[in-house]
Image (cartoon, rainbow, N blue to C red; front, top):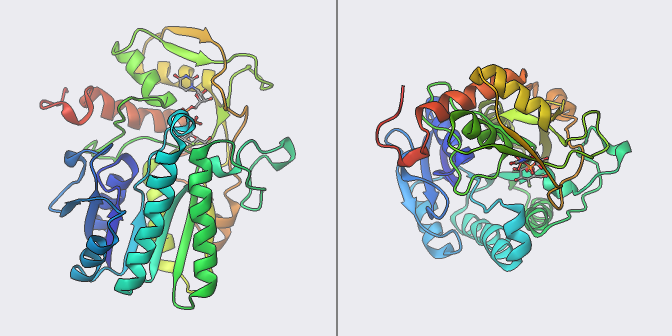
Length: 336
Ligand code: UFG
């Protein structure tokens, strides 16, 4: 298939580009490089540096490359930033996705895989955990709402357009790197737990701060469902092959188990082979105590299960990447 990957220079999008190519698809990446890195786009994949909001240009790209399917990863994804500048999130994540769908309609592209988030669930009540896809969606920040609105538009568009097929994939906490350690997680600034803990292990930061130790969880720290990026992308490829007009696919992508912040730090110490300095701090606003998926719907429908489920293996994968690319993609000479 000819696949357009938006956000193809970002963390998750770049893994999609690589996996699609290895599976024999022809891939075109689009990215405005506001958060992504040119070097993350592997092989001879063409990269179009452009804004998705420019639907006329995107229509030309879709037509010119005879695109069959769009995988849409391009988005801003910092919860705190979305609270400070909501309009930026609604423009970039919601409005641009709608312009992309408009361009797809003009170009006659009828397959769409959408990168959504467990942030659309907000703070589910305890009886909804593990989280199933029918859990009420009540986002608690503009980031979650910006993705939720696209989900809503997609479901309506799918219902009204008999030949349009889409998948909505709600990610939990994505981590790890590809097995060749060619591409991996590189955010600036980095806010995610696993890279931060590993940067502390490498001495790139003095310590890791635990955001809250008084949560109603066994060790007092927040619990999340960490899924390896290659398992996540494998689910995208499966969904793409099974897209069915008129029947939107909606799936949670997680491993179905949670790990606390302290458990992640302990696992990182095992992997890195040394103590990591920890500072206990206050809660970060907007962090729900426990979030983990019930991924049984995609298991039942498509036979997908996460292959990398041991937290040490997920962290090992992130560790290999970070120790070889301590400065991310700006590093000219990988270490090791
Ligand atoms: N944490 C720390 N110290 C840190 C960083 C994180 O204690 O330095 C904690 C957080 O408070 C949270 C857990 O580690 O309890 C995981 O935090 P991340 O920032 O890695 O991930 P989140 O669960 O906050 O965010 C993820 C996605 C978001 C998405 C959100 C939905 O990265 O895109 O889930 O809740 F919006």
